[in-house]
Structures are given as structure tokens and as C-alpha cells.
Amino acid sequence: MPVTYDSLRYPTTFMNESHHEWQQQMRKFVDREIMPNLQTWEAKGDIPEALFKKAADIGLLGVCYPEEFGGMSEGIDTFHKVILTEELSRASTGIAAALGVHNIALPLVVNFGSEKMKQEVATPVLAGKKFIALGVTEPSGGSDVANLKTTAKDAGDHYVVNGSKTFITGGLRANWYVTAVRTGGDGMGGVSVLLIPADLEGVSSTSIGMKQGWHASQTASIYFDNVKVPKENIIGQENRGFIAIMTNFNQERIALTAMALSMSRASIEEAAEWALNRETFGKKLASHQVIRHKFADMIRQLNASYAYMDCCVQQVDAGTAKTADIALLKVQATLTAENICRECLQILGGAGFIQGSVTERAYREVRVLAIGGGSEEIMRDLAGRELGF
Ligand SMILES: Cc1cc2nc3c(=O)[nH]c(=O)nc-3n(C[C@H](O)[C@H](O)[C@H](O)COP(=O)(O)OP(=O)(O)OC[C@H]3O[C@@H](n4cnc5c(N)ncnc54)[C@H](O)[C@@H]3O)c2cc1C
Image (tube, rainbow, N blue to C red; front, top):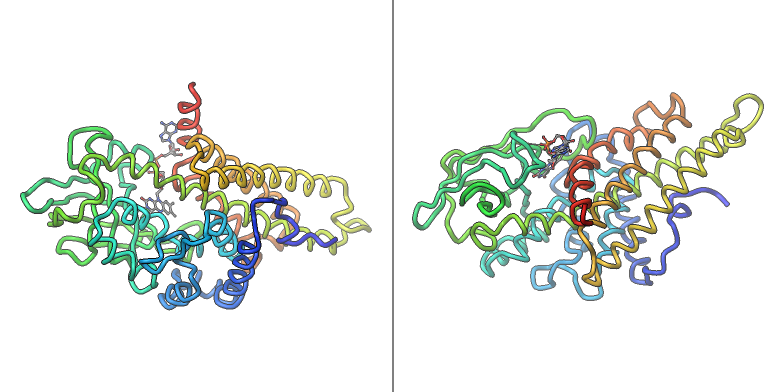
């Protein structure tokens, strides 16, 4: 039986006909609209804005959002979102991050924003006509969110915002920044979330420049210089933003897990095809025991990660998921992917070092998965504390 991307998915009983149909639909979209353009977009450093509209037209942007804003929620669950992320990540996790960036910002608006804000923002974002980004990380640090420095001073009917954010995905294109600010005293109890329109006076953005991977995703620094933000732009309650931001991270961590496992499958598929055909020392590469064992080990790690992910995703939909599990799942998946990308590139030899190879891209992209959405160290710490240590 050939080793393919599909054959490498550990069997799950959680997926039904609707999931399989959705997966086929996403596969066709990615093969048609993304795969042929990957290298051009990476060289350009961005994806075209038209891709958002095309993605919206087939429902890709609206998964798990209320129908009233153009989303899809009836009969839709987190597995649909995982499948979507996996299919995009089969091409590139950077493209998945660029096209799906609203998924780390918009849920805060939809779950905690005012009705007026939801109508104004959610509908055009899910239609692919306007864009939104999440601004939490600052130049002084991203892990210690409770100590963020950007201030929003009360000035009657508005706040005056000063400070800056960095590493913001989609930050150059965004019409709105969902921004973590300090409205109160020190620590987590002084953090709020504001919806800041990018066209307000005093808001500016610059690209952070070249990165190791995710070449087609915008990564920007955002500056706020005496920006007057209307009070009605607060998301949720004043000084209660920290918990909202932390809860929101759970979905991002599941997405990063799906990215890691999908890129692992794509790399194994490429390396397997190579190893089953290339001959060294008079026999197929895959027939050397050292190489055969590498494949067995990679598939062992992949299966364990998939089984863990399926359980966590099922618990998310049942409302029983623990933050500790999701944090540890992300660590498990990203460590798995790092090892798999390394081993696959090793099996490919020089061919894996050349641009155009699936594994070459995966190897460049894999590191950021252990940093973004809560780093590996912070995930272990968070889980350890929740587990009573
Ligand atoms: C490509 C890319 C896209 C991103 N997109 C976004 C985005 O859209 N929005 C956004 O807000 N942020 C975004 N980020 C930022 C990302 O979330 C942060 O990089 C991450 O949270 C880590 O923050 P930091 O880089 O400031 O590292 P720091 O917080 O300075 O940490 C540096 C290192 O020290 C470790 N460390 C820190 N504290 C401890 C501790 N107590 N114990 C042990 N180790 C510790 C960390 O794990 C890390 O390894 C993005 C980052 C990248 C690279």
C-alpha cells in the first residue's frame, strides 16, 4: 500500500460524512488556488487579497461562526476547522496562518463584542472584504501577557492609546486590530481588549522584514501614538480582558497542532516516495534498516499525536476540554513535527535542501509553531500549574 498524505491519518471515529465531504472540498480548493502559486507568493512575501474573497465564497472563512454574519455553524464543529487547517497546511502552514488570521482575532469580537461591533466587523471579515488582526505581543515580550505595556488612558468618551505591538500576522492589511491594552493597574487585572480601527489618526504599521519561514504571511509591528479610541470599542468588560485573551488561545493552539501534524504527513509522504524509489548501496533506501526504523518512529509519534488531538477536539466540542491538555497537545504535536521534518529532510538528503521540496518548506516553517500561540516553555508551565505542580 503506498504511503500517502491520506494514508498517514490515524483512523478516527469522530469524523462523519459531512467532515469527509468538507475535506474533499478543501482539498480541491487548495490544489486549484494555492498549490500552483506557492512559490510565487513566498517570493512576493504575501498572498493576494483576492484569495480571501475566493475562500469566503466556498465558506472557508466562516467555519464555526454564526450564520447571521455569513458564517457556518449548523452541523459544523471543531473537526471541520481542523480539517480546513490541515488541508491549507498540506500546502504551507504560513498560508494557513495568513488566510486564517481572523480566527485568532474575530472570536473575541463575536464572543465578547457589542451587537453593533459584531455587525460592523464580522460580516465583512467573513466575506473576505475586510481584514482583522490580533495585537497581543509587544517588543518587550509576548509570553508575559499580564505585564503588557501599551496603555489606554480613560479620557471621557474615549481612550487614548499609546504603545506598540510586534510580530502581528496580517498586520499590514488589517482594517482593525483586536488589541490588548492596559486600562487599569499592574498585572492581569489591568488588561482590557480594544477594537482599534487601522485608519484612526496615530495608528501606523511596518513590516518586520524577512523571516525564517511563513514567507507569504504578513508579519508587522503596529504603533499607537495618542490614538483616540471610542469607549464603545471595548471588547468585553474593562480590566477583564486577560481571561478572554487566554481562553481565545485554546482555539489557536488546536490550529497550531493541526498545522504541525499536517506538515508532518506531507513531509513523510515526500520522504517515503523518495526512499521507496532511490537506490543506495545496491538497494532501495527504504530497505536499509536505519531508514525503515526512521519511518516507523515517525509514524509512531504521528499516530500518538493524532489520537491525542482527536480526544482534545472532541472534548472542545463537548465543552469538557482542559486548558492543560490543549497546551500539552501543542507541545506534543510541535515536537513531533520538528523531529519528523528533520528526519524527512535527512532521508531526502540534498534534495530536501532545495526550494520546491515540501520538506524544505516544512523545515523552515516548523519552528514558529513552538513559539506562536504560547511557547513550548509557557505551555509546559501552564499545564504543570493546572495539574497541581
Ligand atoms: C511569525 C510570527 C507570527 C506571530 N503572530 C502574532 C500575532 O498575530 N499576534 C500576536 O499578538 N503575536 C504574534 N506572534 C508573537 C508570538 O505569540 C510570540 O513570539 C510568543 O508569544 C513569544 O513571545 P516573544 O517572542 O516575545 O518571546 P519572550 O516572551 O520574550 O520569550 C523568549 C523565550 O523565553 C521563554 N520564556 C519566557 N518566559 C519564560 C519563563 N517564565 N520560563 C521559561 N521560559 C520562558 C519563551 O518560551 C521563549 O522561548 C507571532 C510570532 C511570530 C514569530
